[in-house]
Length: 277
Image 1 (cartoon, rainbow, N blue to C red):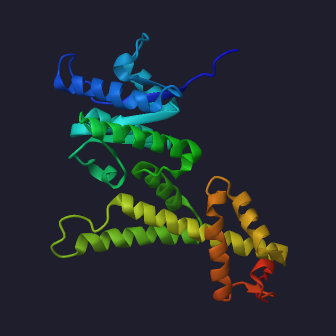
Image 2: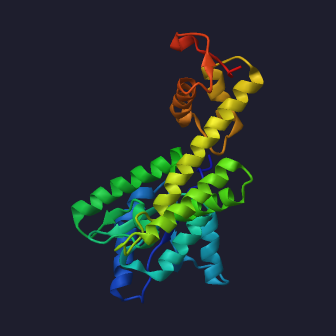
Image 3: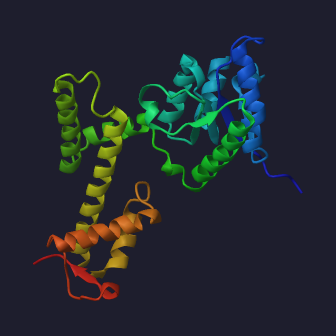
């Protein structure tokens, strides 16, 4: 019986010269933390391990675009590492960040979780378990990952949208950033672009849910809450999942409370909703 093919895992890490402290650090982290955490399900590989002929940079980009999983060591803020991380973020595919204990990620990535790593045995043991946990979470729900680049792409799409709600969200962001820059004695933005993007994407998702609920109820005339929730998810398979069931249900109840939907039953289990006359 043929063995199942291992999934690919590309490791972004500072390389350094063969005998340098940077290379020794990278080798230890790869051998004692990354490999024990992802093998045997994944086949981890680093840029220095690529032995195919051809332009190495192109092969690295191929890995960044196509690997099932990417793990990035952000230790010491290596520019090449951050460049490769940005490429991976742009394609919205699974990535886990690592960083040496005592350090913090730079730029807008500082708002994202990074697993702390070190040569200390206890820290290494915890890092392995944390890495396993994050990989499992990404396998179960790839859409759970949100990065500054993916959020920026989403907002760029909102800016191009003809939907009035989307346009309003984009305008809110512009005004908030302008207000932040005008605050006296404020040397840095009140919120990072990453935080702005998270908040606005959540607001955009809420607008999407509300508008879809109203459209479905109006077109059907009478329908149960459960059928509306499932129809909302079916209408937007990329944006919404079964995990959003509770959010959609809460939105329906809020619309009923606001009078934008009405119900002919006081029994929660038998709710039938219609649009107001």
